[in-house]
Structure formats: structure tokens, C-alpha cells
View 1: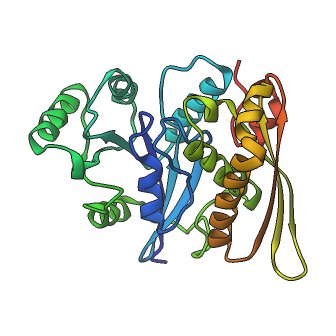
View 2: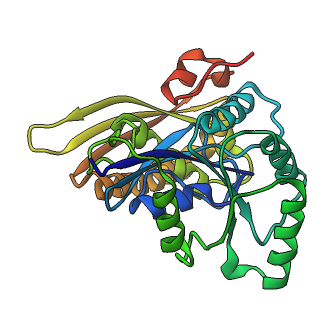
Length: 297
């Protein structure tokens, strides 16, 4: 009877720290992160608990100028994640400031009816005077109900933010069991973890030209999990880079992914990766469905 439950849409420009914030509030990893912008592709739900309150965090892709079909689908997923949310949390990189990307997002928010909070992230590496100037600049463009200064990486201000979010949620039954932390399937989470390693281990634009599909996910009799994944690339040269000299790079990526998956799942993981050249993989409708994106024209 005392339960509360609501949705918080976490939106912002690429690399603002949205996924790091969601992971911190949930208390464990549910969204992949990397120093590269646009790491998040699909809308993911993270479930955070605060007493009798369930906060469903909608981790959205960064909003940016979209050119490719995949990019347009990602931006559409971000704005769709804000629809009907009980609260929209705009995450702004306090160090980077409010550039054209952030200003465009604020313009899109200004006419929306949902409650809106402004969260200035990365305060641990930002100058206070600049943060105050940035805050005023944003407020001149759009009204926000509350303002928070946090570091999702170090945890500064995060307990206060979580308490405030819990207080803002409406009365209602929980949507998920208390011990569930995400709506992502094990197959999708496994693919996301491997994709995270592609972002961390590879350079330049190559990670953006890749996709990961979990082809097979099997629980063995001894309690361990066997996972077969396919890394899709557009050209043979990209395949060669991912494989590395004598298979060294794919081995490094696979080992790092396996260790992360074993830690998250709490069981032994047998991970098998192979790289496939598939021109125009980002025009495959089934791939969009598998990663939770809508096909856009």
C-alpha cells in the first residue's frame, strides 16, 4: 500500500554521463559506458530502489544531429523515452558546457509538459564559476523544477539526487520484482558488454561501424553459460583490424567481455566470438528489432 513507482527519462547530449548515472543509481552495471560519445544505442531501463520506491530509469541514446538511419533511430529512441515520463532529467556535462547540441535539446524540452530537472554532471572536474554561469544560461532558455550538481563517476551529490527522485515518484505498484535491475534480456546484455569492449579497445570510428549479435545463449548442465556472438562489420579491412595480428585483438576483446559477463551473471561464461563482413548491416530491419530500436525512414 505504501509503494511508489515512476519513470525518469535520462536524456542529454552524447557523452554527458547518462549511462554512468543510471548505473550508479541502480547500484550495478546495466548500461555500457566508454569515453567515446554515442556509446548507448538503444533505450534501456534500469531499476533503482529507494525504500518503498521503485525508480525506473530510462537510459536513452545521446541526442545529436542524425545522418544515418541508425543515428535517426537512436535519436528517435531518446525522445520516445521522454514521452509520458513522470520526470525528465536533462544531464549536462558541466565541463563541456552548453554547446549547440545541448541548446537544441533544451529547445525540444521547453514546450514539453513533463516535470523537468536539470542535472549538471562532472562537477569534480568543473570550475564552480563556470557551472553557475552555465546554469543561468540554461535557465534563461528553459525552466527547470530543480537543479542538481553531481559527479556520477565519484558519487558526489548522487545520494541526494536519488532521494529527491524517490520523493518525486507517484504512488503505485512496482513494475518489476525488487531484485530485478534491468529490462534487458541476458542475450542483449551479453551483446552490449562485447560492444562496450569494442569501444574501449578499438580506435577512431571503427566501433561505430560495428554491431554485435548474440546468436546462441545456452545454460550448460554445470550451471555455466555458453554464448556465441557475431560481430558485424561492413568491410574486410575492418574485420582484419578487429581480429588483430594472429587473432590477438579478438582474443583481448573476448577475454575482457567474458570476465565482465561472469561478474555480472555470477556464473562461469564460455564466450565464442567471430567477425562477419556484412555490407550495409545497418540497413537490416531484424538487427534494429534485436537491439530495441524502431525502424525509421
